[in-house]
Image 1 (cartoon, rainbow, N blue to C red):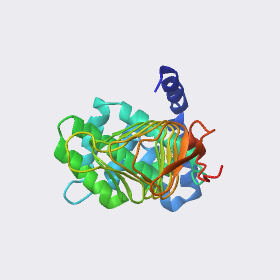
Image 2: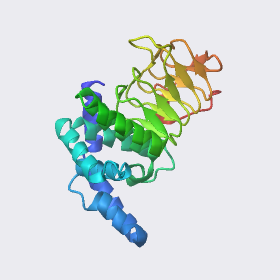
Image 3: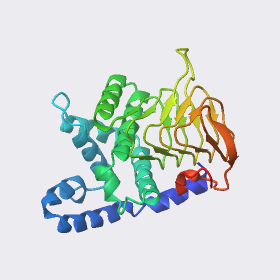
Image 4: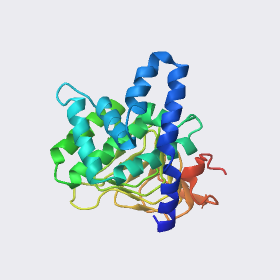
Length: 269
């Protein structure tokens, strides 16, 4: 991500938390039975980082590791790396901008399992990179059980991501995913063999991967690629093309520089 893109992203997220609080108040008035949920999750929190840590801890709460303990872990992660919260805000914008079913900023934060799974990954990745691998694996396990999304803590994922519906998404240990990528349910970024080193795909920025697509092995998918639903991709793909089929073949160039933003899945266009 360039400095200009980073500055724009920061500007877009500066007022997002204020908007979330205002929207949560409106939701609480509209549905009094859920008012305590909106207050405890958003309205009563001092800032977005606190809300994120508490919300995710509440979702992953278990008899073995309580929400209180997880909240402390997540809070420490955010203090050590504020970029976790920055990326989480960008992911909210990604959901709001790309999903017509998302009509306010609170919806993904409170209800979208794809969004919540990505944030759980972000914490597990931080823990993994800082030597707390048992805790990272625990969070991965709980996320997989709760949200049906399995992302290895060592994978490297960018910001501005959207996992639409998200059920069945699997991302392996050495996978790399760029910024502003959209994936639908059933996507696999899988490995090839049991050899050490890179064995999972590298996905460029602005890529859209449609439902059920499987991308396998140490291959590269260029920026702005559209992968058609149900495709099996076994070879590297250049930037700004559409691929589809089993095995996947290039069927045309992309006039859209970032199909992940438009979410246009009709491969005839």
